[in-house]
Length: 290
Ligand code: PLP
Image 1: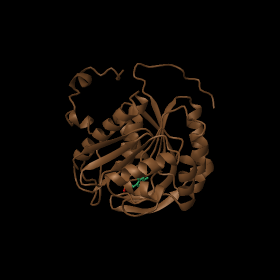
Image 2 (image 1 turned 30 degrees about the horizontal axis):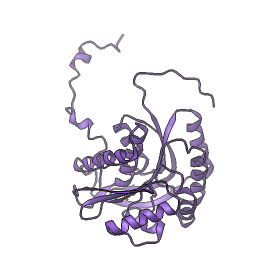
Image 3 (image 1 turned 90 degrees about the vertical axis):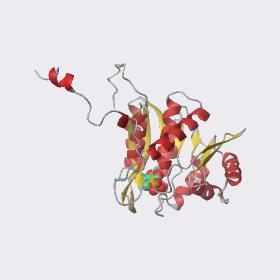
Image 4 (image 1 turned 45 degrees about the vertical axis):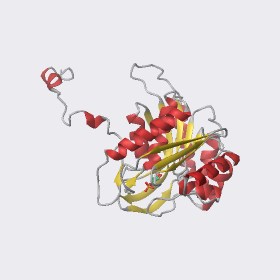
């Protein structure tokens, strides 16, 4: 495919590619990623690894997309030449994990965040056993940062991970397994505590729990906010702090969209404007009507 449009615009935003699953209730997965990129003034493009059937009450089914379709989708987006960062979320199965490995092995110069999504909060597996093996043995080493929650860190390392000390041990093991930097998110601890380890030093970030457990898509949102801050030029440590603040605020402003779990309000910053903006000037002199 040819790239013929090289014009620049003062409104230009960095382009981030998300490779992730689709949640039709739009609290997690690709939809959460795209909203989070937009909230950070970044432009998101997306390659779908799997369709899920779900609503606020849980995931009912998972349909991984064909690996050739995923590979071609990603390649087409990369061929446009503007992707400047990559986020990987739910992968689905082994064939798609191999596609992601092939892509990340060739795009190591771009900032990237891998959120090793394994199962939904409702208990549905979002990555098969073969995919987990590829993730553990091959994918881990590529991204700028890996963002497992405590359960994912336990599954990847085989360790017990339920408190800050265990999170530190697991983070160290993940780096020994090849990860460049790790943030283990502990949103379910008494205080929301994340442990960062980059192979040289640990840092622990603690915030009060904003609301109880009923939030949906927190991991997707955190990893997307992290990659957005990286592509905007922040250092990893600062990007983590800003992503954590964004997630806390998006949880604080969340509202129910169904009877089940509550999606984060990714675009809460827009809500600070009045709900019906004052468009009287544009309506009085409509430049677009001829
Ligand atoms: N669906 C998709 C497509 C996801 O990527 C994820 C998590 O990353 C989920 C569902 C599950 O989200 P949660 O664990 O918040 O229920």
